[in-house]
Length: 501
Image 1 (tube, rainbow, N blue to C red):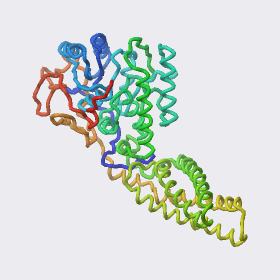
Image 2 (cartoon, rainbow, N blue to C red; image 1 turned 30 degrees about the vertical axis):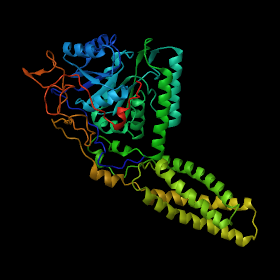
Image 3 (cartoon, rainbow, N blue to C red; image 1 turned 60 degrees about the vertical axis):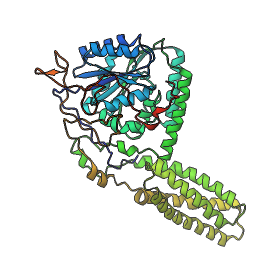
Image 4 (cartoon, rainbow, N blue to C red; image 1 turned 45 degrees about the vertical axis):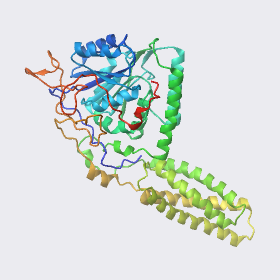
């Protein structure tokens, strides 16, 4: 995978500095829909756990996405009762929509979410977020499928969960073990760049987020969890599975065509400042060779098929030239994406032009071989022609790989990355959000001062001075309003009235 630096490339991970500050370190989001019964006990239990075990300042945000029962009123009462609780009100359904909206607006450097049923044992929360605080990882997930996890659930859900993860591994080459566990966390600087790339607004949201993060080379930390199934879950398994399969197809198509700018999510090599000066780091020659051989083998079969078709109505030279031309375009596109990891459409025309030059060299080799064969025999057998072409293509393949690696898709990470790598600085400022919605982030997140410790007495008071806290209903001008507010869609298609979740 190429990691060319770009204006959106993330800086190196850094440990959040310890100290006292008003902004919470952790913002735990609980997305809810018609959970009037379970919301109160869940929030109180989570708050008690954080108060007793979490060493830093924290916030609990209730993301109510279009509940039609008394869930909004329950959320307001909890906000009035517990100082660390805030609430959002969205007028559209969708767990993914709720998470993206709240995470995009949050000022906490570590963002997490968990399901309202608290099926996951809360003792896994600190191990979940600790690698993100330390700067070791970019995302963290709870895994029910890890060897040391302890899970209590029915055979039906166990089968569905494992089947879904096998589908992800087979179709999207996912290496994380559990995509569906409602217990995840992400660094805010990563979320600012990653969330605009995630399209789903429902249950496939976090799976899509994980797949894109993994493909971009971000580090995902997995925590074995103890998990007890909620028998009263309102999730519609069949519809959720159908929507997830549609999401797998959409994401797989986008990854295959290279339409996602995942280079925005790359990290520089090493997190030690001394490592950032290292140049000419090997970029996986063995993996590139394997990918090139696979693409080359498929291209050869494609070429031979085309040659056999074209040979039916033209001479050997014309059939060879046409077959080579078509297969060369496909070969360059496949190697560009799969072997050398170049995504997006930038430079695609130049790469194809250079690929055609390489095609010309291959044409000269194969055409010369055919000419030599025809000179030796006036009417060679078709099988003899194919054997000669295979030998000539093997020689052309070696030369093609060398030219692709050194000329068409050279590794420029050392020179470019050295100039554009940005070291994160610390600034107390926080982003402002325009009235009527939340803008997409353009700049990498910069840590907002020292890491807040949880005060012993009043959660948001330091030395007798109350620190102004983030509120869900605070406008960009700093005025205070009802903390439950209507939010504008983050993405244009979020206004879909047909959303069923």
